[in-house]
Amino acid sequence: MPSRRAFLTTGGAAVAALVLPTALGGCSGNGLFVRGGNNSSENSAGTLLRSEAPLPEPFQVPLPILPVLEPVRGEDGTDHYEIVQRAERMEILPGLSTEIWGYNGLFPGPTIVSRRGRRTVVTHRNELTVPVVVHLHGGRTAPEHDGYPTDLILPMGGDHSAHQQHAGASVVGSRDYVYELDQPAATLWYHDHRMDFTGPQVYRGLAGFHLIRDDEEEALPLPRGEREVPLMIADRSFASDGAFQYPSVDPSLNGTPGVTAEYMSGVLGDCILVNGAPWPVLAVSDTRYRFRILNASNARRYRLRLEGGGPFVQIGSDLGLLAEPTAHEAIDIAQAERFDVIIDFSGHDVGDEITMVNDHGRDGTDLVMRFVVTRRESDDSAIPDQLVELERLSEEDVVAERQFVFARGGAEAHGMTLWTVNGEPFSTDAIAARPRLSTVERWTIRALNVEHPFHIHLAPFQVLNTGGKDDAGPYNQGWKDTVNLDNGGQAELLIRFDGYRGRYVLHCHNLEHEDMMMMANFEVV
Ligand code: C2O
Ligand code: CU
Image 1 (cartoon, rainbow, N blue to C red):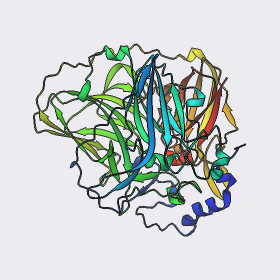
Image 2 (cartoon, rainbow, N blue to C red; image 1 turned 90 degrees about the horizontal axis):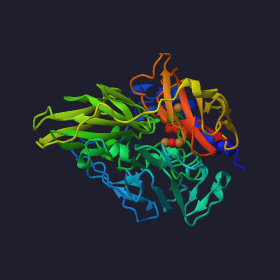
Image 3 (cartoon, rainbow, N blue to C red; image 1 turned 30 degrees about the horizontal axis):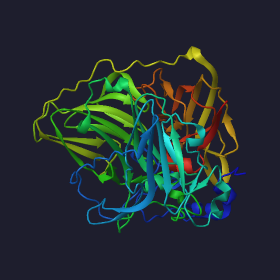
């Protein structure tokens, strides 16, 4: 039975490697190093890993428009897709080649577009050298298809003995993920979720968009076609030869998990990629555009603002459209959160430049991408005052209350203090909560030591309040699956456990924290 993660079971070597740099006094060749790993640099938990490769001037390359994956067949209300996970080489920095691990060899992966009411089946084949797990983030998914961290797709061929302790419900070569997607139109994303190795595997490129559409959304006069653009924001760092740089203890990702000690709070890159390109430019017409913004970074949080333009008019949150549009001068977006926004370029002249900046960043990480108005066009889109009917959960429906504290501490392995949930490191056997199917609970989530974005699988929530204030704050409207928590912060959530019985995980979406045990099981009973 896999009851403890590799950190605890294979202990000695892993922990020695993790602790060593601090014991030596914390001198690092990788630039900014903050002792103890508790560094709120750039408003994100983590340590900046500086690129060795020269980074390009911003706003030189076009924004990549992500391809939409065609189903291989559609029958009886089911659309079948096939994805091969494999290594590929891409030119991300000019003149250098970067090996990525991609869905169909792409980073970001191809966008899947599903229709509510039709089943989506995705066959994933693993042609990488490591086990993988696919999770549809935000999906209302049966537990056996949710990408539980030990339900591995083992690589074809090779010796799997090293992975046996994390066997779970593992298969070799390929597996079908079945998504019923009985949920409102929303911006979901799929990404790797392998036990102990999610951080490095997402960093190498295993992430893509999965959109759900429905009739309600389609009836709205929102911008569409080439004026509806998903934007995946992710920071990366590059070695001198152009390779992604990530401080894994074992870069083969087949042995000891984890990052070196100084990156224990998170890995912050110094190059901001949007749709896989560094600080790109999008040529736009003087019309409204809809952008589905996803923060797919491992550890970095952003405060996005439009210099020379704005505001962002938010129409949707993580799990669907809002009741009403809301204008923001800036947007705080934590890891894994999605903001569905309209930017109206109609007040601009041809030649105007509007720059999306990150007010939390500096020295390059304060820039994200640029829009350049290159043409005049007509526009029949509109932003309706009312978007969708949004059911509001009520405190009167609450049948149980629980508290979860996300902190460093409560558990140690060989002298290393771990990231924990309620003082417990993740174990596949321990169930932290057993909510009943079709009930609503009130959960209080607290974050200590550093910032932690809380994420729960399956169960959508609404934020009652954050930070001791009596409302949810400007960025937590509508249905959510991830909520940002500041250091010392707190959020009260109303969570509906709906759809399926079974075991799922909740965790911190700082992927370095997640890999270092900040995860727990809940079981819907
Ligand atoms: Cu975005 Cu458990 O994941
Ligand atoms: Cu965390």
